[in-house]
Image (cartoon, rainbow, N blue to C red; front, side, top):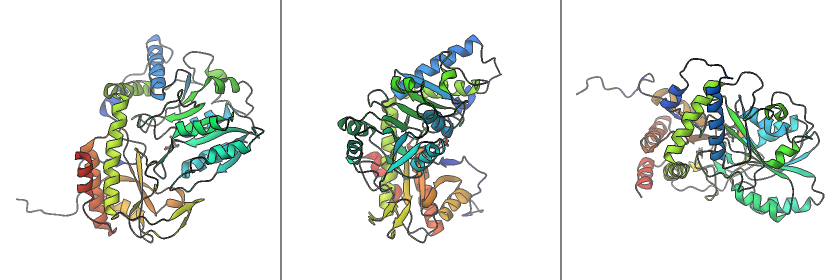
Length: 414
Ligand SMILES: *Cc1c(COP(=O)(O)O)cnc(C)c1O
């Protein structure tokens, strides 16, 4: 029997439970795959790796069209997608969903594009049919691109990209479809070719289970053709030089080690099988949502978030995403009762229990926290995180109905 009973665990023990929605846990074998001596990035053995990884990444995007990598984080590929296809003054329609949609739109503005926001409540997204209606009004086809964040990591809302394409087709509109898949790719379903996507931006450090620093853009034939006439000033991200050598040429040194890591990560995904990866993410997300709903006692406040402004009062813990058909399988944003500081709760989870959770972004700062559940995760990890969240709720005085962990267990064993 221990004579040193203490309720204050030390942060130095055990592994950090990292439940941010990106970056994510990196499997040890991925880290090991990068632990190798330097080789010449022009060496034939590396070219083979690059060629293989290129083909296998395309299979994750489900495309037989084009793919280019950038040695940057997702922001670099955001720029690389826009700057190569459009010209200053081109009009873009951004489907509003939250922090990431707004930031991508802001980047487009800075590149000289004209942005119209198709407004949506951050808890619900843009209602279905609104895009088709807006595009039908654009009889002169002034709108050159529709931008959408597949999985809005700030709010935990996932968009039905196939339906969005169907609305564009129904309106008979010729705009390109640009999709940010950074926090959805390799975690839930995405089909570049089938859904008629023209540009898809992905990144290494989320569902792809890799370190940060490699991103990519899926490119349709049409988008590649449009890049010949695009007038936005560009150099580093310019496809004209990148596509001159197959499978791709980097402006400068190719980040060789990143490709060895990515190859291992792709191998892990392929061994599990993408459909099984998606099913696992769905199962784990259901468990997280079951816990959150239980903690809040089924509260539905009816508060709205328009333009980043809250209207109404949050009485009890609640899922931020209020449309059960659009809840994300990779991240769950949780609203905390009005007046409670969600960051104080996060600090306790981290300082006392070594559990790292995502913060509320932009106007959600202090009002919400986020549980990332994507990448290299399984049931024990998610259950550990849920139980520890409940512990930190008690510790921080965050009002909740106890038993969320039981609700997650019930969800997983149903
Ligand atoms: C993380 C994220 C980004 C930003 O990616 P970085 O690699 O941090 O630049 C963009 N969009 C979405 C949806 C994200 O989740």
